[in-house]
Image (cartoon, rainbow, N blue to C red; front, side, top):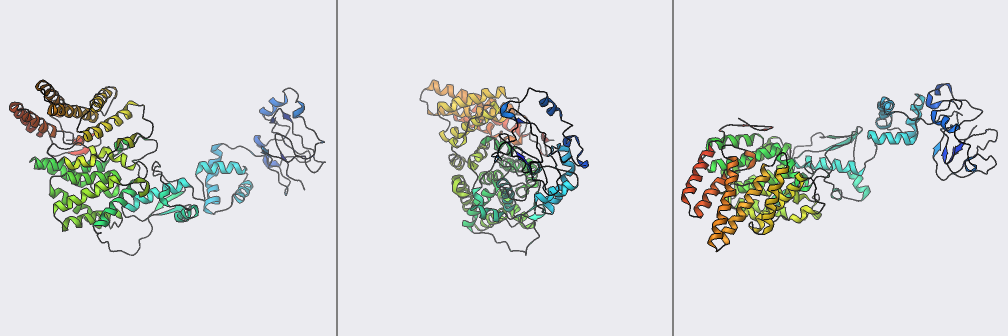
Length: 592
């Protein structure tokens, strides 16, 4: 019976049987991959080039054999005592039971793929140990080392155990589904995964695994399923305190979504939401509210219908951005009927689809509160809930890091001129720009402009557009847009309105008649530049830009220029006619 033979770079272990001479030539520190026993010849089934006999050397071996004679340090000394290996570099696959030598071989990725299904069945579906899998595959003529198998398993995602990354991905999906009332079970290789057991074994809670950057992509061997329904449960609308708690719970669950991809600047995440269907739906309802307020009922009705057709996406594509956007919309709306229909619709829809998650309970709770209180009480309650959401401590609330800074751009969506300002400014005052720049600033001009425009919005609203920093940022953003090839309209709008408000503030605070006149002229110049860009066209995604014409009319009247004020009013009335009475949203904008 032959024993296994193992050798290292630093030395070798002679075969205990002196009759079996093992010749292992060295060249410097590199071992020649040529191992054989003079008493054994390779089995007939191992005649592939990678398993050739000693007399059939590979090209690399031939190169070694033609090199200079080995040095003393590389020569073989048969009289050495056995050396205990400290770092195994190579090992022959030599069976002490069968006497067959099976040298390890490298297989191409294509060869591995031809055996993938069989290996998966044995290792994962039948749950066989790796050694047993290797033995079965050897009988089928496929040989590889343990290290080769494990390396290939990593590439294939073949795993029988929970990894931290897998658990985070599963928790992320689970939170999203929980928010809309979907029960969730995970199966790996056909068997249910016990996430709680992993957390208990590690001694952690699910909120210790706060990694918002992970995408909602489960490994190949993991599947997310909805388990069979349990006994029906009666859903009761929560009380006032419970509604506030539900807003936090929903925010915590919905913050784990694809709007926070890895290595993405914080404020850029709002750009992902800008292209979302749910954002378009809420924006349409907002535009409808404004159109109703200025007497454009036919156009407002078309916008409202479009928005409600997609409002169910609150359940199908839930996100914290959509939740906060909706809360701000209902706070800003002037049409009480639209606000009531929003909550009535969402409460009824959740009941129709039998959703029983936090989001469904929240909408039904808000609808119940609105139905049992007057509108002012309802408005104060929603505002308080929204403000508390912007003030929560992320560290101890289970929210992913930087959740709140990512929401800041939502608070600065353009608003109609006649809407109340004080509550909006109060929410904007909760924004802390320093939280947006904790990491390195981006160098690409597009991303840098997003940061600068966001700082301008925060700083301008918090200082009432005073200070040289506002003036500097506005001009910088405006200059940056010249180097950006696309999607600059919103940045131009931010910069021009900031300059208009900056000079108007100078006009209002100056006692010098010359300075007042100069700043008034500059303020209306920038405002007219804005409205001239959109006059005669309609872009519902840019907010109520027609409201800037109303602002322009007010500023002229404020300066005592009634003639120009009347002219601005006429321009506003004419611009309303550019709004379509019926429209369909398309991927590239509005389809008339």
